[in-house]
Image 1 (cartoon, rainbow, N blue to C red):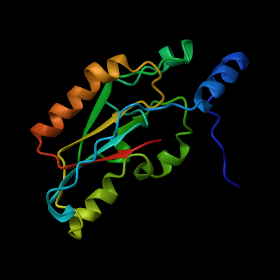
Image 2 (image 1 turned 60 degrees about the horizontal axis):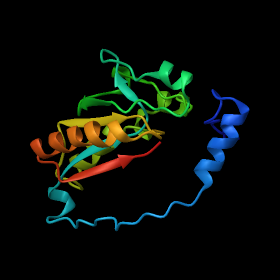
Image 3 (image 1 turned 90 degrees about the vertical axis):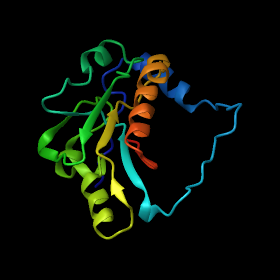
Length: 170
C-alpha cells in the first residue's frame, strides 16, 4: 500500500479549501519557455542537482519550518548548498509538505548524488559539479526567490562551469 502525503496537514480547513482551489486554477503563461540545446554531448557535460526538498547539511542553518507553520502561504525562499561528496548521514530534511521517511531510507530520491556519481563512473555524464543545491518547494510568494536565490544559484553555476542542471522537484 502506498502512503499519500497530506500537503495540507498543518493548515486550517478553510485555508486548505482555498489553497486547493488556487492550485487547481489554470494559469496562462504569456511568454515562451526558452529552450537551450546542449552544445556538447552529455558525456562531456558537468551536471549539478537542484532539489526542492528543503535539505540542509546538519551543520548548516535549517530551513524555516516555524515560519511555514505560522503562515502556510509562505515558504522559505533561501538556498542551501552541498559538496558532491554529501551522503544521507550529512543532511536533514526540513519540509513540512513532504513525508521525509522515504528520503531518510534513500536520499537519492530527493538528492540523487550517488546516481549522478554512478553516471560519471560509466561515462554517461562528464562530471558532477562541485556544488549542488536545495531549496524549499511550495513557495507561493516568489519575490525573494526570483530576486536573490535564483541569481545566486545562476552565478555559482556559471563560476563552476556547469553545463546542465537537473531539477529534482519533490
